[in-house]
Length: 228
Image (cartoon, rainbow, N blue to C red; front, top):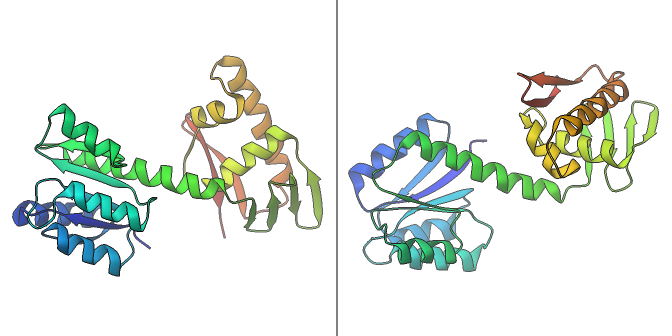
């Protein structure tokens, strides 16, 4: 299912163009033209991220963000606005905004920011997940136990954390530097070589499951590929 965006923008021409751009890039976008309509849409539907203009009739973007955070404090919010004064930017972040982008802006940059915020949100949710059933494996990260078919393994702490990170990113790119910072707490030649050793160990443990493969991605990271 495509990620759902609530876009609230009183400039209907600009809003329509931005909606079309995001839709072309595989988002499901609901466009509201003022803050009150935006709040109505938010209360009646579910959204993965909100994009609010600040200066709007009936209810401004800051007030709308306050109302949204009362309903669901975890919903990411991006402000799009011509207001670039320091106090306005600070207020946006104080209200819990994930980003504050001043107009005019590069739509491709906005797209990357949206994807990065959604990835962070997904990572926070996945971080709470302790058990994974993928292909023919069952992995309990709380107990550090991995079952591949009829074989069971007790993982070392680093094997466990690395496999958990791969499972969280399954079928997606897992950056090498993310794993190094999160598990090894530092990024250098020696920790990178250490991680390669652990990747090789995990590949051996998973080799009996033909539906899974850990692949290198251009030397920049790894991907847990689920084939079935």
